[in-house]
Length: 330
Image (cartoon, rainbow, N blue to C red; front, side, top):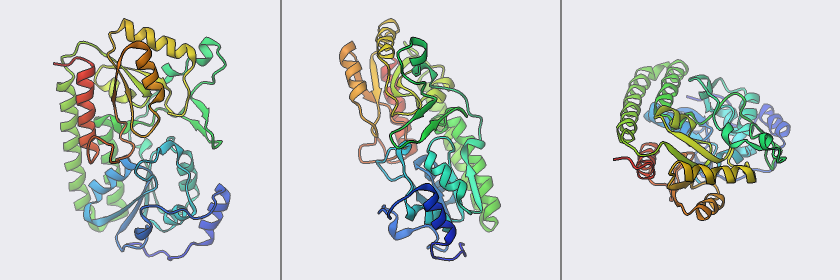
């Protein structure tokens, strides 16, 4: 499919220089770099986007993920090799607002088809309950303009990017990706349309499992390590109380920790959830101080050997089981 030249062009090298990237770094897709396959080459920003591309594209696509298994997506720094993969790919599928270095690299890339999942569904504001620093005057900055150790401004003013954790919104994104694939690779449009319909049906079934599985519960409140589950909570009538904000690197204030201790007591919270790709220290400290249990609620940002499943659907069903237990669902 890809007929562009097979070397790193001046445009790619310029992009590397502009983004301040250093030497080439190895990754698991070195032997199958985008542009070397003769198929419709898609570079995906991280696992939820790669999963969509693979399910919708089927045998007609070759998918390269910029974020490797076990790597925290928010912390991704694009390498020169990955910039070259973008240069050679037919399409890029990403979620603007989640990974600043990806947004910048794709923005500067000459790639023909750029699919921003954030434009395929409505984004909403979540996670502000964890940004109480300004309210309490404790000197902590609001998480909406958090700058990480790499100097990136993790600006989520456009809305909460964690749309894939709501099966309904994820299905909306899938439909948009399917249409984009059909337009970019019309020779296989019929298969893309069929695969998209199948995926949407599976997501509708997952939505129904969450609706019925959480229908009869004794509590609505759950505590998480970072505010990734706002869409899921809103979809099923739950209340997420997050230790950190939308970005997992944000440190909670002392006032926020005390507030969570009170919430746990008042609302009958039994469990503090942590996730597999970031430190569980704060979650376990809070649980220890309040006499609560801990369990995993996976934001499905990547699949590793520690994941409770081998793909998006299996991990989401494991999340449902964990939520049912924590919320006393019958």
